[in-house]
Length: 78
Image (cartoon, rainbow, N blue to C red; front, side):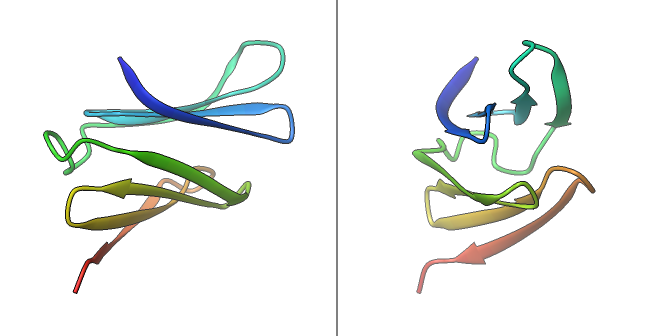
């Protein structure tokens, strides 16, 4: 179940406790990322910089995601 979302260039970016989705304007899934390490870390915001840089804030930091490639980078709060 999605916890947070953002809309950018006719796409909806959804993030939940187990993963995320990108859905296009035709309501078709463009990409999905499942079984992410942040289970239980409660996503609070989604910020879309462009179609290859999506930031999701979680408890203790944030995650940078490239949905087109599926890469994920964690940045811990100091």
